[in-house]
Length: 178
Image (cartoon, one colour):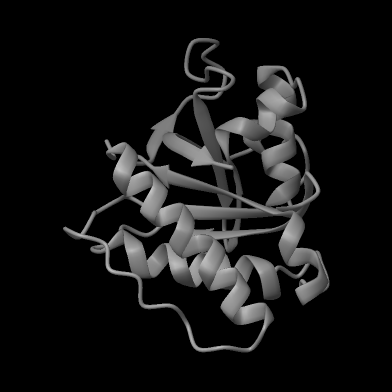
């Protein structure tokens, strides 16, 4: 979907956006040729390999670059699970960008509907929604059912909500980073 050059420019933009937010500088204005549309994007920020923030959007975006910049800065400073990053953490910063494909409603009982490492999940019920990126299940060596259950928990739902009316979506993602 993205060229290697576009990937590298987006990663640089994400890193510079984190640094700008953490150091209270103006946001970078890095030129990226050709607007790149996507179905959504998430940026994951790590310090020495440990998660420090991950935020994004499931909404389609017209121009990927400004959304990557916003999500990167917000992941480093506004993820409610973590304290904002500090300037001391910047030398050991790593960033991943996940460019999402379209959401597809699935039957989570169908054993072929979810491929670990290939699909991310969204679970929705009422006003609750949880998202887990494809790499999460692989990194944690989860089974398909563990992945679904943990996505329900991420949505602040019961782990078995997928068996009781919650809607489950899958998506693919192009993931690249440091």
